[in-house]
Image 1 (cartoon, one colour):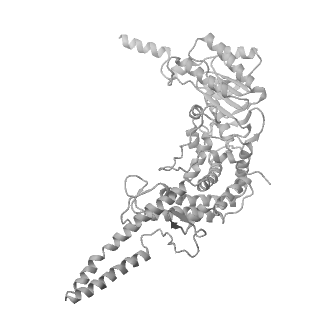
Image 2: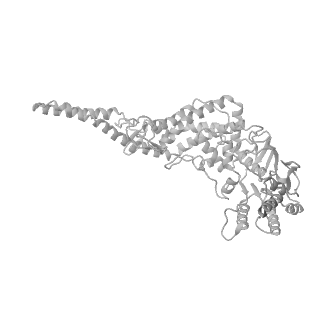
Amino acid sequence: MSEPAISDSYWSQPPILSSGDRPAGVRDTRPTETDKGVLDVKTFDAIETDQLFDSINHAVTHAGQSVLYRSLARPGMDARVTRKKQEALRELESNSGLREALKRFIEEMAQGEKSFYELLYGTFTGGLAIGNSRGGKDEMEFSGYGYHQFIDGTGFVTDLVEAMQTLPQPRSAYLQDLFNAIRDFGNSRIYSLISGPVYPMEGKFKTREEKPRYFPIPRFRPSMVKPLPMFGALGAICAALYFFQNVLAAFGIGYLGYGILVLAVPILPVVLIAIASSDRDSVIYPLRKLFKHSPELARLLETFGMIDEVLSFHRYSQVFGGKMALPEILESERHSLVVTEARNPLLGRANPHYVPNDILLDDAGRLLVITGPNSGGKTAYCKTVVQLQLLGQIGCYIPAADARLVLAEHIFYQVPDPGHLDEGIGRFGHELKRTRAIFFSSTALSLVVLDELSEGTTFEEKMELSEYVLAGFYELGASTLLVTHNHELCERLQSKGIGRYLQGEFLPQGPTYRLIPGVSRVSHADRVAAALGFSKEDVEKHLATRRT
């Protein structure tokens, strides 16, 4: 028996179906603490994960977008799941019939998805509203008693299960698992309550199969028009009219009976409103509470979103422009990342002039030091490394000609952060505290980027501290990138025989944004200052004008 394509650990992720009073937002999932997951919050922000999501997101459903965002915020490290997701993507590439059928399925279901959230989280204000009208400024507030939302919302779920039966059977294990999960939901009790009929009984709800066979329990009908109560009210009015008509006729004033009938007619709407209010408060609200707390229904919605996520990855590969690759997923005791012609997922999109670079982080070069003047592409290169690792780790295509990687247990990205200083330790202490947290959480399966290190102290202290910290990361075995302007530090590390060294390439006309082997010993600070209008000549010219 083959292993499931979706591990049980996946379902321990934060659910995308909120059990609260409001629907969960697409970007609600946040990373874990520094040592608890692949990403931490500081790394998540530093590598522009929100912008990365915007770049790759082609999901058309709320569930799909939520699943995709959660994949980026809390990536897993199960190589089997990543490979099987890639297998599904390759099947979508080769099987246009399945791809188009899934695309139609998702687009059709997307139209009804909103009504499902309206049922779960709407407030129904009452009144004799006709149709699905909003009752106030709140987009989740509706006139009426929730009948329309109940019909449309439960209809979305039943349509989802029924439509799945008509789709072509996939070959990939990942899609098979997703299809089977939706089909299995069709056999659950919660689905029986959603598809109906529902029988309210003593504060609980019975399905058709659970209802005592010969016990007269009225089924719930999501409509104000209820024949039995209406006929009962009319019968009571007619009986009263018949009684009073005979009594009044004895006194010669039988014509008053017809007046009583006219006055009794407004009782019908009052009766209907009372019944509708009871339906809302004793059936619709309790049922949807049951739905919101159903793990089976939450898993159904996430499964639906996971199908949309895979389709989103395929669309991303088609519209990005240029070479796209599914990395080969390796298993090893140490992290590695090797990419040919890597492009940044944000800067390289549909940009024919983007300059690609290779990435080589392996046993021979797990400490990579990048030097060079500002504006030469060092930081962009480091963000490319981490963003491609993240995309590959969640099973997505990456902008490259070819790639292979080991899933990272932790991904850390440290940048100077002078805006959040702890009292009494200053900038140096604040940054060192972050470096310490990264170091003690890193393993041989970690990817660490240090964009400058040991700022805010003297040059001599910076050299000494940086040297032993980097030597420590090297001994841990983590893939470590350092961005620095100090060629002296490179010389110290080279004397120990550790590290690989890249520098930003500059030509007379400016940077090429290619990283080439070597250590940069030149500065282009004057050129950058001149481009900003803050060169030595600009300062002197300004002072001269002030003197005159």
